[in-house]
Length: 64
Image 1 (cartoon, rainbow, N blue to C red):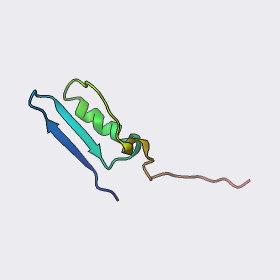
Image 2: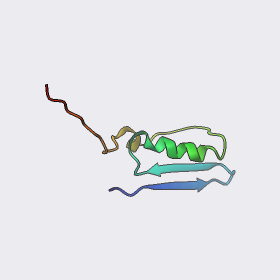
Image 3: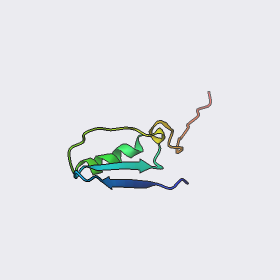
């Protein structure tokens, strides 16, 4: 399992930037939603992890 982390930077002008690492797919959106409650979102930039599958896929097969 890959390490998961949130890097947070508080800039001199008071803005906050964060990067969610090790969370694949859209799962990072729920983490972002919590952090976005703290202020106004000025922009979003998805990392490569966002475009990867989360690896926890399920497949159901039915015999005919």
